[in-house]
Image (spheres, rainbow, N blue to C red):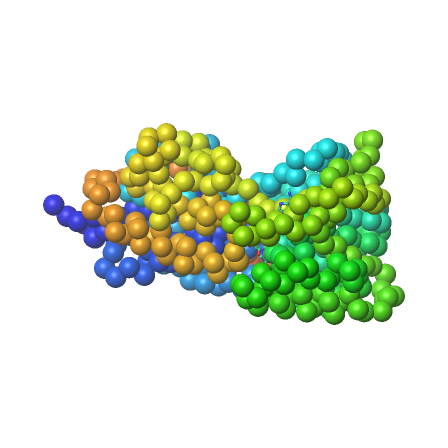
Length: 465
Ligand code: NAP
């Protein structure tokens, strides 16, 4: 009997999701010596690359060049991209099980965490992820409109997404026009009346989740000054002791920069980013639309595990703002017929092997998970590489216990269920059109943001050939 993973009995793997974690999983599968594996990568959008396309800030073009590595993986003759195919809608879990020896879920974290405060759903209050999707031309968010006639904006949270949102709001038209920001977003931001952007971190400068390069960039904006209240840039005794016990270079450099910003004389740029610390939103106020934010002052307290947590005091302040972006982290969502841990918002797993809590946490044969839906929404793009490698190593170690049948190619069924499936060649067509349009305007690309337009452009090219 032939062995799974050989020419006679090739391993068929479906990867659901085409972001970094999915591509690193495919890359590591192809690196296995003597393993014959066919990898089909699915995405519900016609475009690949997940958050590299829809999340990374438009002015961070260098970070996006990581797609060159993914293109190399995609050029492997045993790789296929099936775009515009939604798991659970166009293809069921049962369909996939009948055609693949292994499924790797790489769907990321597709929604946002909630603050759970009164007024959170007032108009003018958005998840930062919506704004990010909008300015990046993500088809799900292109229809949104943000009232940029407001002068004062709150950004809640101290992570890198909050930094991206604040920086994009603070950037000038000149800074944005040479990026791949969505056209409609560039127009809207050109007419923005925003002058003051307030970032609210619930803990202190030593606990901020943002990283040094992002903070440094704040000091280099042509159109915005950075304002840090000197008292809030100070490090409290608990944080000081914690930094001695757990030296942290990122925190150390962040503190140095923040203290430097806090000493700057008042600037005269047209916009300001105000970085506030040790404050939490208690309520968003307004009748129909957000008009103000009520903040509670926090102090730090050591939790039972030693981490310093924010504890609310009885001091409040209210500040007028007309737009709020809640940037307190992404959150994973469940997939049909796949185990899910609603508390951690991840697919439960051991070393990347999906386990089923409804069945005594037993391993689900042939199902694996990588990326944010495996470990939660943390880490930079590169963090996904070792994470995906670990999962694929588990898969390879399991080869003997997977379904050993010779499985049929899914393509005939897929074309029947989703005739408009988008191949990697089709994506290259979109990519070429986008970059050509961009070159004409001195931009890296001018993105498609409408699925119908993407499909029409692909069809047009097919007709022309
Ligand atoms: P994040 O790094 O986890 O930051 C979330 C922030 O929200 C933290 O400051 C957190 O404070 C705060 N927060 C959580 N719950 C809160 C609440 N109830 N009230 C007030 N504040 C609250 O998440 P993210 O910014 O969404 O980023 C996700 C991941 O993508 C991160 O690993 C990030 O580094 C990465 N990323 C990287 C880049 C880049 O490399 N340029 C760009 C974007 C994103 P606590 O610390 O107190 O919990």
